[in-house]
Image 1: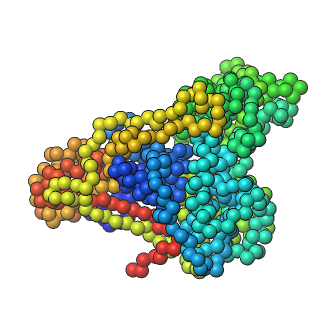
Image 2 (image 1 turned 90 degrees about the horizontal axis):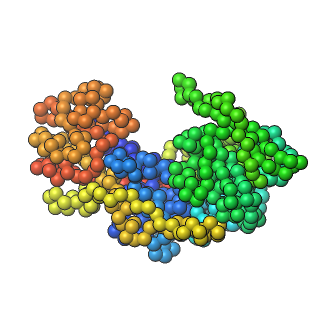
Image 3 (image 1 turned 180 degrees about the vertical axis):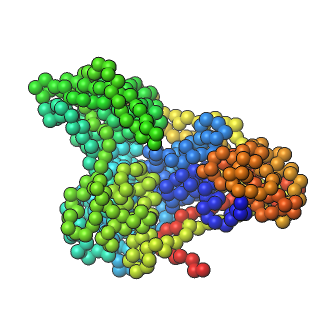
Length: 595
């Protein structure tokens, strides 16, 4: 194998599994160390720059970082990254003076953002500070989009949304609330230099089965029902409720129904429990609140008595998988199951709706009704129109919407300056030794034995009676510090210097995971099998040195390294060093480096 080029930004970035997995590439270990040090405002600003909504995401993020967390390889539970993000939001000081300011003199370019959700607000934040005049249109009365309308208040209070959306609006962003945009043509033909579409996936899928029309008065689309609850239009529900669907929207529906008076609330899912799209913690919370989840049942009919819903008829199924892993649901042949109920909430998926975009405007859609986009630039076939969030590539989550907002802002800036959209600025990368003295480091490298901390919650007898009462209390400073200490500092990288190594193998002897091997070089498959601990996970690279004096090479399996620094502490010549890798994604306005 060729020697590893550790100067390539993606090499060490990939080793920081949590940051690599985060769509916005938030520098997770960096802000966790700041939390451990009690520097909450600094930790908040690290988050704010990358993911824009730390307080919101600290409560409701889908947490793609946590399954990737290296801690989960040495014990069952990863670091509670999401809830630590909330800590920096809850415990920070007033950070208003740290926020960027929009220049008094604008650059003469006007950008229309359709929708006031996370993607549009991220575009507005990134471009407003560059002198763009941003106008955000939304049919609602306040910013936040579906963060405000579809996430229950017991999970995400309005004051958190108000605060973090306010930081962006206060950059001089013009807002036109209660304004429904009914024509893209008018915007494209108007005095706008670019248009960003961040309208989400506003239409819930329906269950088109017998009885749907007849019992329509008692069957609600989940996302519409949640919006009505959020804005106070719906304040009660029937006692017997069935929620159809297995995603996070279904979990929000069933938990909201319990708080609005539902006494017998069930979730019925066509897949198995493990295959449900809902996050594991959302399923746990629903079960904790006394809501049963019934699996492998497909709805066949809404049963009614002259329009009054009396129940839902389900067919029992089992899953079969073909050679490519594709699932088919096969009826078991067992008798159908009739579940009695008075009301049904349908939460079986969301889809995009663009009735306001004219078909002859030059903007192409694919066979699924999604805009045809350049996946990197998010530019549509109508050059001045860009998409982001759920409206771009289908329903995902808030952190993905923010990441796409950053990408779209870079594209819009390049477009407005007449630059090539494919020539995108690189991330900012830094690698700094953490050495303090001979074998001491500027970070705590002792591996904590603490178990994952459980977030304290309010008593159920109180929260189930008040749909606006936030359930989780969040970590206090002591719990936050203990949880932060569980982080393995994956961004503190082991950096090897070939010419300093005397091949004493002391690092091999002391490594607790046997991730270091000195051996003859070879092809990757061969080399992976010859390591002291065979490297079977090809998702993580091997760190291969240049050829040493004996003709061997040093090979380190990045997959099982704990970043404990024992190799560097043991090395008598300083061939190993612990260096902090810091990567901050590029932002709009960053210039491409000249080579």
